Length: 213
Image (cartoon, rainbow, N blue to C red; front, side, top):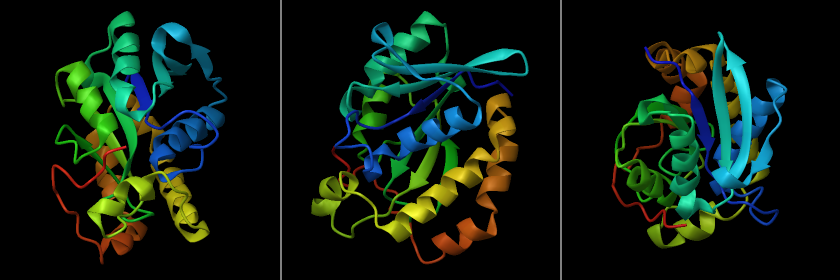
């Protein structure tokens, strides 16, 4: 069990993207920072907004890249190299169109499913061996409509479900920080609310679901 040393929220910078589905990772990191009373400040050498929290005597860095989604890896590698953080010590929080709003899952490694942020991270880290926390934002039902959907705002009902998923996953912060992902996944994936949300939704499992922004 290896403690997490870096948590990355994926999203796009700027007010025009702030409330879009693609910024779900930013929302998660912002909420965590608020709960832990951490300040995120711009760090030019890390190409993003950076904060630091302590858990059981070790530092955990928080990062919101300001490089835009498809260059997220540039920011992550800059910080990881500077602080000698290995890929398996990184948790990436991102929007997941193959899960419905309100669903949240964790996993290690795997494909990118067309997500350009994950694709760039994998390219820069030269491995997919990093942890992911996947926040469901829903699929529009048409591959051609994916880009527009992730760059659009969720409905009020969807936003409430996403916010609830963020809150549920943040309840597991002590386990996440300690790197106890087996216990975290057991608790997260067996939540009644999550299972009911996913009961009518099938993950596509495709390596390319049209997620190209």
